[in-house]
Image 1: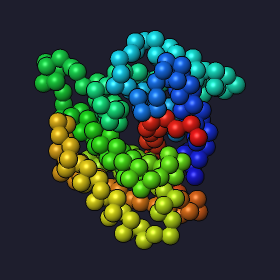
Image 2: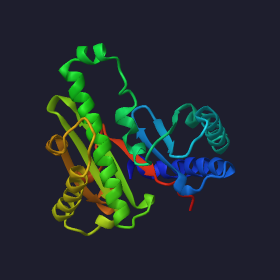
Image 3: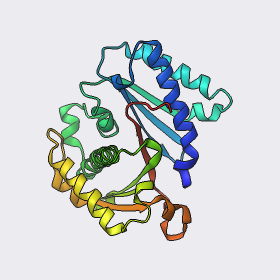
Image 4: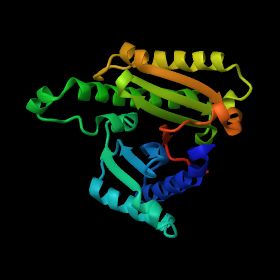
Length: 242
């Protein structure tokens, strides 16, 4: 299955490296969350580690990277392509939203000078984060492991659309239209409960193009293969090591 299958061992190694360092600091699995994205065009892995416990962020950044380097000592190209952010968060759910909000704090004058095009792009970034979080929670509600599902996305600013392909073992042999409706209804419910974000739930839903596929379908390739331009969103929440 395209990028996610080949990435699975690497993701597992990253999760284990983070787990190892966190354990040495006396952290349990439910004390932190780890999320990331993979861009197949650049082979870039972007990681965000968040914890609601007080930490020295610089010390943790160095410690986690050192553990990751040890795990990938034979794959230096992988280390060069990993970006990491370590932050204290008030709620572990904030980890999902990092990719949309990392550069939110701007001078007021700069905000006023932004073009409408840039604002629309930012809305799409928020849509990606909110929908990805909802789909991850959907998977968790089904009792799926991280290795049981895949989330792919791409944005189309020209048409103000964000496209998601939600792939899972649990969708095998299911009616794709029915499964898509079930997943979309769950996303809609999750969005209706969100507050305090700079995008309205109805705007996210209007921009959302969601497709659900079984893993067997995607493995067959052809029309069901993951098309070009899609990035992968994944979470280890909390980190799984088995």
